[in-house]
Amino acid sequence: MITDPLFYLCAIPAILIFGMAKGGFGGGISVVSVPLMALAVSPVQAAAILMPILIAMDMVALWSFRGRWSKRNLIYTLPGAVLGIVVGAFTFRYLSEDAIRILIGTIAVVFCLDYWFRHKATQKREPDAIRGTFWGGLAGFTSFGIHSGGPPISVFYLPQQMEKTLLMGTFAVFFTVVNLTKLIPYAWLGQFDSTNLTTSLVLIPLAPIGVRLGYFMLHRVNETWIYRFCYFFLFVVGLKLLWDGIF
Image (tube, rainbow, N blue to C red; front, side, top):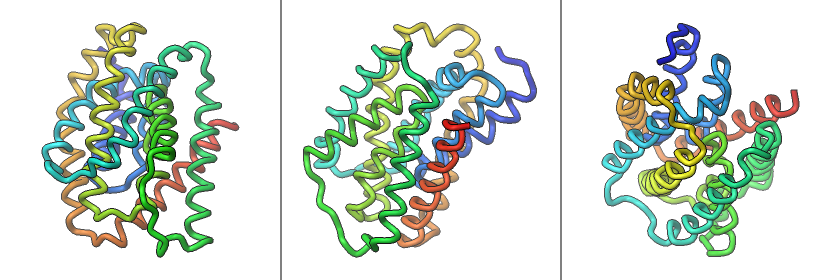
């Protein structure tokens, strides 16, 4: 088990932030978790430690949003996501984490700027299979490496202006399937050694706390502000990823 106090100083807030995002508060802010933990360990090890914790979070999120998800959106996005995970698994050793950060950061920032300056909040967009497969695939690919599938899939989900619990429930089911699928290649690549698994077990009690805290906040903030939070945090995270990838 990791015993470095600096690691836990970084990991505890990282896990709570990730849990709050899964509970519906803050949206894409979850992608700061791996970079935050990477202040104390490598990004690859941080992602491996988070993996079992994310599964626990997904179970709590599924229970919290039970029955509230968009079947149509999941049909459009999940096949592409699984394909993206497969591509990520086979290119894992050749990927530059900085290149992935720059890609995701650029997408997030451009998407938010386009939304704000072209006032797309009044233009509800219907889901379609082609876009769903593309953004789902990109989300699966980027989720595999650094658990950062939130920004790409947000580009597809947010413009539909779903009711807030329907939106978060759809996110919950999408990432449950994505994370369960990721278990196979993570094990194949030897990511689950005794150190990582033991550390995950120590931190896993934080998973339901973070998710339920996010769920609590979601139901005390109106829908307009939830979307504002999602776009704001998505933009901030995009800038952070660009900074980390370039510098």
